[in-house]
Length: 230
Image (cartoon, rainbow, N blue to C red):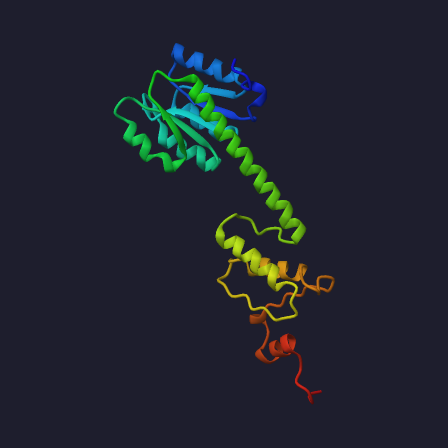
């Protein structure tokens, strides 16, 4: 075994290997298991569906097309269960164009038989390492959000990053903030974040349902009574 390679350096991962019964498939399963993967091998879409419905899968190796196997359908189902799943397609000669077109659907690589076991192992290892890195980044982001009082503001998109930056600027200010958005867009969540990070964080956080108040009473509750009124 090459130096630095072996089960001890493989991040934990569960591989779903979808292959018709064959000596080559048996050898491949044994090889990948020796390299440290938990391998579940099945021979049909139906059996693969049962696995995907019953246990988490990190990796998928499947033919693009074979008897009782539709690889892209399996990949769509696997990514529905776990969006981070990475797949390697096994394609026949002439199917390379179809496999290349699927690279934006979670397919990381494809191979034409006979399979190169070492190359496949290296590809699966890269997928697992990337998944581990993304998990570590998500955990670091979660801890940072908790420290800054941003729990619940999940996501790593540019829009979420801009929202966090804006909240960090606004929260320390003694200023009125108007939050505008459709129902369900997260106004309550954002207002709570502002309060927890504001100078008034130790004061009560009061929520008022304005449509339930008469207009005059709503004005008084929100802005106080005008001077000279009893």
